[in-house]
Length: 533
Image (cartoon, rainbow, N blue to C red):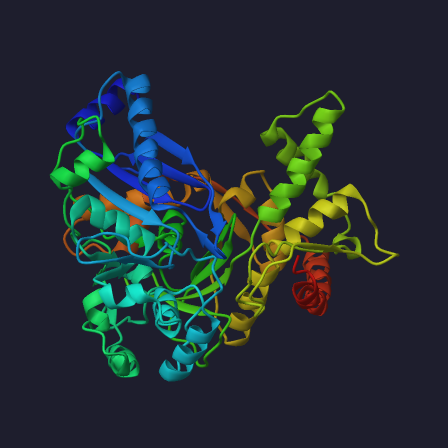
């Protein structure tokens, strides 16, 4: 498509915009009706650990969204010579789950708590027992009930509790709604009614009744919507917030806001039963769309939903590539010290590629990149560790392979549970920074799941592209068309990608690494007990 044709599409508003607030970057992606990326915007940021809470200050959330949109608007201006004013539809996504608390004036009344926090163990245990349904530590209802158990004063003044995506959507549209995928990480949902599970709503209200709060849980939670439903429109106040320059026009329709799990499924066309995807970056999680609910309760597995409401099982690891990135930065420092600095992207490529020269079991090296607690392994604090035996083969290639493997270690444990439950998958898609270097990340994941792994050429656009697709589905769907059909027949038919299958010896090598990984968890626990300075 020519630049002139793209310019015409943007001027006509035949576009969709997706904005996703990720762990380390806020990204905006503007697409056309075929899903082609026309322009992007970015804003880099990082969470902070303040008063023992992983959080992002509200002013950083606000300024980050505005900076990201300004970056997109500048890209459009530089590339096409026009102001971005009219957009066909908008969607907002963000890190799933967590806790954003507002009062009746729409003001934040407690620090935002991200998915990374593991300070909700007591609440999660009580609610899991009450519901007989797994409530992970990062779910919104676990955060809410922990605040009640801790007698936090703000709870009595609650008017709205949401995820980060739901909060930004509220700022822009004034609507208290949420996509079912993100809703499923707030409170258990019923895939038949596409709403919160009523028996659990009643059980929660009865549990907190002695506290004497004026609210019921439904008063606080956003309304649940599925893909294709209208979730409101950009208000005048929302337009001024998003684009202080005043160029964007109010009235633009919004799709339901979603978490990064739902947008990851959409961006990899893994929204139909027996499909799955693995998102690997700061956190790492696998999503498998189920044909039916699991037979047993597993504390290691989240039961959530696709954006259109199919049940999905999530193996979610809080810790992904953070420690791996730290080691790569260390090697970058050394390169600079020698007087031969290496570009960061090239450094990742060199080290990732060199890992393929290592032993298939990583030579007996064992790192744990636990910067925070890890739900799957039932460890509630983080201590990054690197372990080896005297006879371990301590080479650069093995070091890198071990860090790549351990980025998938906790997720692998969750996937093994699903395998034992009889869950079957026809295809696995990969996306996220872990797969940016060709072949390497795919080989590691393929070894972990013992199946071919496909990475689409659009994988680098990630969840921002996924939520843009959901916004386009809102305005471009045909009567009776499902999200699954829309993606299959109108978006991914012209997309290309690569599929990689790990050699059998690497599958066996990864399994040996996992034997070490499981055995070494006691060392991680001992480090938490001992390292408190």
